[in-house]
Length: 296
Ligand SMILES: [Zn+2]
Image (cartoon, rainbow, N blue to C red):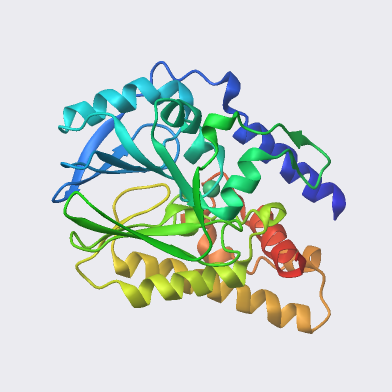
């Protein structure tokens, strides 16, 4: 069991070690979502942008080497310097540009635990150590549960839930445009990454999705952490699938089965064709799910 988790961690570390990656071919493109709310795509998590008289409000920023292309894309939609830089969570494919935008003078805003994780050495469960980010990358405004910004004729609301994809996730509502950026609590790349070693929880993630589903309607446009613009029905389908897999795991655990035995049963088979092609395979997903049930 330990060896399979260690293997997974190594795989994830490779997948997340972006330092050596070549971003020169990456194009950053802007899509108007609604009103003055835009989505920027390039490489890494989807970026949200709100333009207007109060300056650019940006949600997540992918990777530092893409910062110039991101700035170009923002100019292309009539924006200028980033004034407010919001992070949905601490992962490097969402905060990699924090030091650039923070260094330029943007106010970096995130949940308390994002600052904790970016500003301290992160020990992963396999013993690997990730150095702290430079100080310009640290959020200078943090909060515990929720915060609202009244900017650019929008009402931008950040809501945190304990332990979901990490322990510092927020979703960002744009109330007037009726748009939501979910961070990695909702993604479309297949089996989602439950970052158990950073405080994630499968039950917390499902609860957070329930909260999101309750708060949006059929007209709401959903910017996922990764993937194309989506709708409420997509979030519901995603949530139902997670619940179904969790239920199946719990039934077997109650019978005394280990997670290795449950993996052998191929309980996720019906979802593998659609979800198995992402960077998290069914087996890894089940290991993370199980770990997130036991981790405090
Ligand atoms: Zn993430």
